[in-house]
Image (cartoon, rainbow, N blue to C red):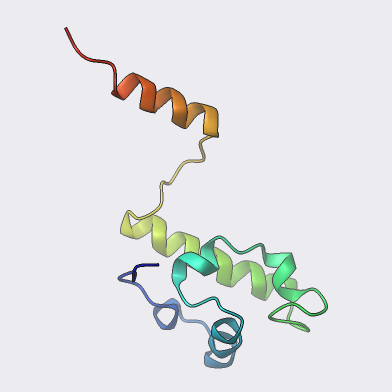
Length: 94
């Protein structure tokens, strides 16, 4: 996967959490942004024993940073809506 201009270290996440995330293969802000918070803290999860709010906060920090940088769309779209936009955008103009 390509590198992103924002690193995990730029998100104001405690260093020991970044170490745990990277040890589990979450190496980029994108990897963290697509993580499911409750799975990060379940038994055997990356952040076992962490507070659910901590997991949610770090995932949301990653998503917010990607949105703010323009690398992630701000609004949620269903797959059907995206397909409709692609079809509409690819219709030749007269």
